[in-house]
Length: 404
Image (cartoon, rainbow, N blue to C red; front, side, top):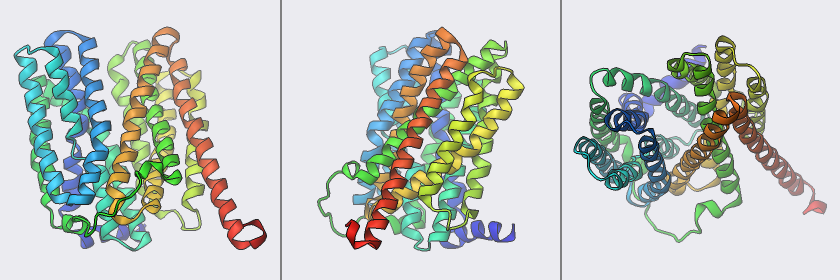
């Protein structure tokens, strides 16, 4: 345990004590803006359809704009890109609140929602990219990746709670608080001295798009599948809570998965080096397949909560492994665009999974929605096994000239 804790204590010694808390607080506004937008539109207009379109526009904007933010950060440096993106993200969020309050044309508000998403400062992916530049030691880099994965999970647990507290006063206040936080902490993260390590590249070599590289494309497919898993799970969990007569408990049920994910995510850095990344990806995606299966039939809320915690124990390590593998596929000066691309894959997958899961949950109940998540992690497992098999074949060919 002492060794485990000392590994995390080493991170502030490298990057400065403020980076970890600032990076954590800088990403908290993203789930706040997502849920806050839905609650604001619903309470202001009474239209769930309009709220869904706004949330979809926000996600679409983030999926399209994220890789561009990452590419600009690689070319121009994280400092200027994160500062500008944070300020634009905050400004568009405030503009959305004003447009809804003034009952502006819906198309205008939807465009603003998409712009809000496109200007997301991509704190999580860019922080991972920054650690790649700061740390050359694989053990410490693994610890940093574990921290970033756990931080992502924790903010998606805390974000809805914070929004709920602000919404008790005013839904608009929740959005404005998120905008203020991203303006303060996003800019702070961009101006932090550690950003100098992720400065502009000295040369702008022309590369093929990173997603065309087979190793990255396969990880993008895994990210897309895991995002679909999340979307299906959220709609299925909401259906379970609604069916039990306690729809408000959906957030707490989903948080059980987040807690499991955060705990095991932090522990990922303690896994032995001989348990390679390829093996980890196969193991944890398969874990998700096995853990989701009972949810196809179980609807009792206490049992679902326990099972969701078990499911979550595979989520954090799986995501951390995906990002760790992605980091190893590209040169350091291309990690920004790679990390944001992987993140965009999750966002797109989430939209697919939630759409399919919502339709199935409405027609056939929560078990049908869980099948979306099961199918998604099944795809992720198949890709993980294929990657592992291909890696073994390549290594074997290198050892045996007759197989080359």
